[in-house]
Image 1 (cartoon, rainbow, N blue to C red):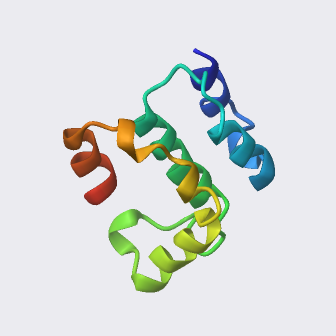
Image 2: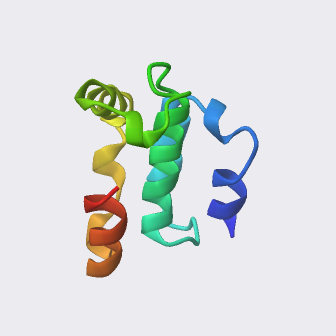
Length: 95
């Protein structure tokens, strides 16, 4: 519940990275970790000026690298070990 309120907020994309990192470290977000991952990607896209207006199908290697750079400090905060194999494949490997 808490996570849904935060990650679906109109202000979510404007969170500072340090605040986002603190949120990602919380144990009581009450949402699936794969949803946390999807929210991190959404935040990263919204905070990467190079790709904010581009459709995913039009991204090139530089665009993916720009996104990675934007979210690099938060990636280790995702608890991958609690994501099911199917969700990991569908939402992390293929996304």
